[in-house]
Length: 343
Length: 285
Image (cartoon, rainbow over all chains, first blue to last red; front, side, top):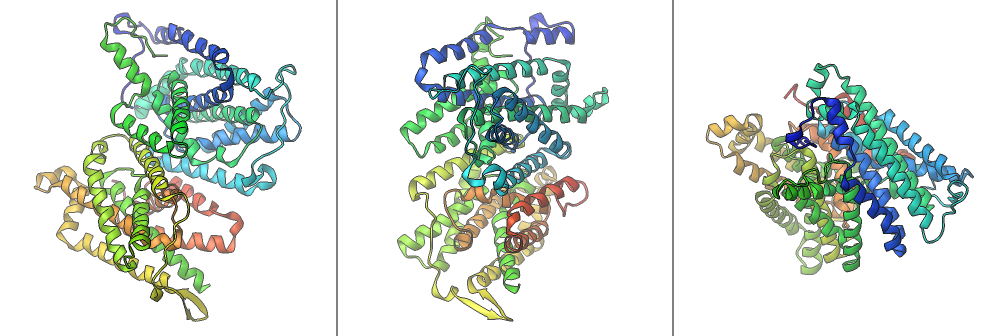
């Protein structure tokens, strides 16, 4: 929390804030490698596309939490509320005959953002602990509401009969998940670009300032509360898009898009990858899903144990997540690639 | 009507015994222990194993559950928790959620995922007819035990040397250290007491709340509501909050079942917005 990212090496310290932002926004080799790997995955693992799609969705969800936690410093145990709201929005639209995926996704994002805006005023007050409890409470209320509104959401049975039109009217969602993967990856990439733009804008800099010291930021004239409301709404919107993606690619929505485990999982993914770094959520999602897949092959039922153990060890020994570890490792060697994972 | 009142009070009392350990760790050590429910679950499963496999009588199981979970609590506190006291709340939350996941999977592995049942001894079963309402004897038993515990805890905190040291350590840890109070050991003992109480609550609750591996997650919300709503600076706050919550939950499920658990969450969020420190917080800390 206290560690502030110093993206550029001290030797080439940028002269102004604008230069700093430009420096951070530059594309590095790591960016290219990462997205090239994502494209290559389609051809290398043609049979594991559903898993890859899940990774993309989870990555987007973790990215939205990163915006909230890693940049603005808002802790939340209830981000699943927005993921679920998006999933239900997209699912219900498609169920009622509006199967066009892209507008459905936009609607999912908007519904979740609206919910985020409405509840953002609740997280402005209080300490971290109060925020944790309030976000948890809000998420529980949304879950309970979805459970009770069975006429709309299908309740505990889930939302069936979600039928999607082809993307752009051309690419049909097929059984093997080809379209689903390209679609999810494209959406993830676009959202990533948007979030990258947001955090590398002055807005993102102010958010980091608020995370560091909110009082001081308001003293230099930054409207703290307005920024927090804005980032909460944005993060909710991106989580909603992730939820919408899940609903559209699996063509099914059940109550567990809203439950506590979902929020905890998103947070966990981010911690595994490293918060406060753009790639934290994405790398975390890859590591998490692969670990889950591998562990559940060994012990079908008890992989949760190892998940918990990983979490405990990460908090104790590797607070920066995988990317933090990687950066520390790279620093120790002669400073050749110090821009390693910094986004 | 009387039955609901009675069930609600018993339920609330049980919640208090389960949650007051959390109030202690949160209020005294400023540590968010989401794994508190895992201790309660431990106490519950211990009772199940002792009774069903070893044939230990129920009344003997209760102190055993208390002592053993307290022992586990001390070990965990000394080895793991102590390393996290200085960290942020988020780290503590993540760490203890990890512990919860491990506990759930471990219990699932050893005991299976099904609901656990115990057979209460004959003298605790059955109903009493009072003033036209029927009252479960076991609920009466719970109220008696928990009521006695509340009195003992309150007296212990306000009248004994341990209690006054503890209050001193909470108010000003540095000054307390300066006066020669071993704050670390005091906290370890308090943590043990808190986990022991959770274990005892879990043992008492097997018959009322049910017991399966998801117990810690299912009741985590309730504990947190009790603690955050009641505030953590006294025992009275959580006690009142538990009673309100118990009565509200039982009455809500009885009268307006369609609202389900809505009432509780709404109540918690509303109270936290108005009083972020809880209902019974002392001025500013």
